[in-house]
Image 1: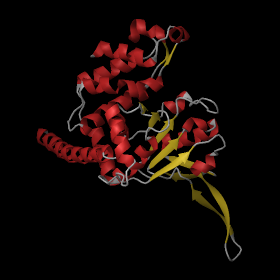
Image 2: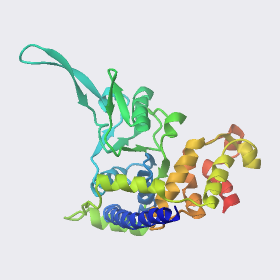
Image 3: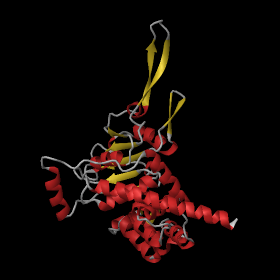
Image 4: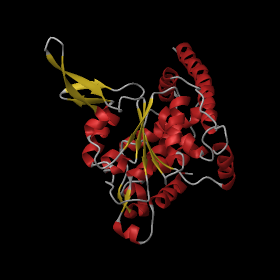
Length: 332
């Protein structure tokens, strides 16, 4: 029995070393095209390795669309993009049935697949679409299949949605409901690049030749990496840190005094997301097991879109990132 456990451990170690090398190569290939957004690239890769979806928040012009295109090429995934607008219908995303007539005069319905049938889907400005259209994407994200005219159509594997949201213009937008926000494993802030990164962007993107993304992985290799993430061991101290952090982010006794600031907090899906994300981050760094530092570093992007503050807390000028930092300080 002990011998078979050792063999399994050896197999995981060998797989982890191989996969870690592939992922690092993919990260370097992305960084050769996307400059000054190392944290964004890392968190997006962690989300995909965890098998989840990400919400990218940032002003226009920060290479969010380019990041998704680059990820598609680098990871060997079929990538598609949907520009969300107020008049976008669910059938524009999912596809629709059309009536065909054969030369013999026989009529039958034929399904024409929509852009959701991709391995990497960019939902650009997702909060511009109506709630009805948002909910059509919600089912696809959660269930990995869609239903049109009573017929089920499975989505390709792997299937990831990277949605973008503009934090500035609120006119003509429909805020994402809590249920849909919870479907995103992470909310990733895309900030302005620093001065040196922006200098590099100027030279690299306005010359005669522009850097082009190169393939570093295949879809099958990515699926194998996602399976491996779920097999990586997690120490008891890391599990306890995840539980303490997520439970203290809810209103109630676990949060202590901070609980009075929180209107509602993350459910068990947040704990699951954090458990997968810390494993994926360890693998990305070439480690075989996650640490408490991984929990602390990933706490904000995993938790902040799953929480809301009370009105008195907002009136005092408190923010969700502040509250999460306060909760993190108890653990680390």
